[in-house]
Length: 111
Image 1: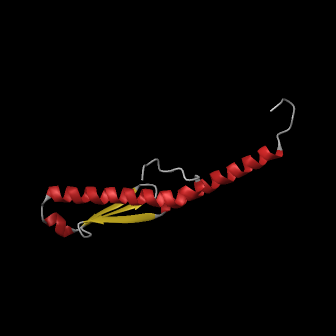
Image 2 (image 1 turned 135 degrees about the horizontal axis):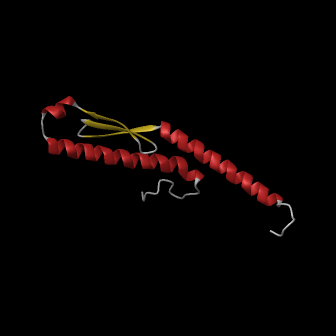
Image 3 (image 1 turned 180 degrees about the vertical axis):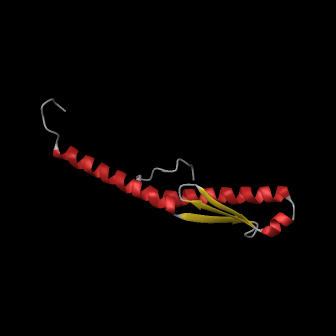
């Protein structure tokens, strides 16, 4: 842009649209932080509650599973439930943020 000339109206409109998109994206990210998904393994013996921003909120293990004293099985079930919760949370984020990012994957994952 040459010196001394005021900005074009088109540039101002583009900046306003960009600012609005940033605000919508920030609002969507805040909403995702409040949304949760639950994933389970072992017929519900292990449950993971995770936010839409991939923050683990809780892990629940059925007492009967602890009584079995099978550490290997418990580890496998926790791993399965956590991985499922992460995947489901990423899908939730992609669905919520996708329209705002023009189809780019906002989570950085390769779903």
